[in-house]
Length: 157
Image (cartoon, rainbow, N blue to C red; front, side, top):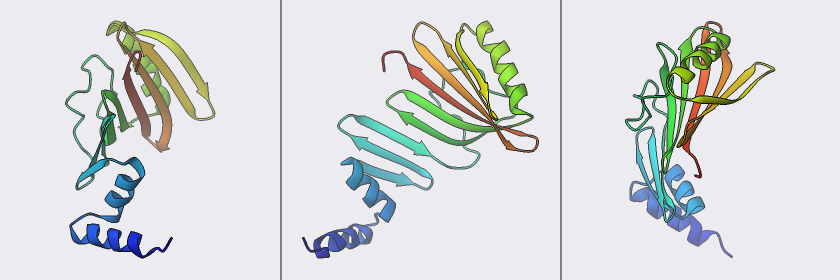
């Protein structure tokens, strides 16, 4: 197979306003890619995936209100995959303090802890209620900051 048709298609799409990233993601997923700044949505037959890497963005509007988040957090990135939400945060303080705060707050918000692990600079907490599961990962970011990843999924998803 000659590479000319692929190169021509990539150039044609680029001329139509598609970035190489959009072309590559669309080709890899078979989906339609919409990009707006640091936000990318990929629509496939199985549903949509939205990834946002905009620094300091707002928490996704559909993020559950009954899930603990550390004080004074800043959202680094977020992803919504058909109702499964993931947010990557940075917060002032130590990861151990954020770990302890989540462990103390979530039961009072109606969640039952189902797993906990602390090893080699990373700590994980998992909570469940009747409908959802929340997994936290706490890591050192830089001195005085905690890197916290939060994944919220519906059970059976």
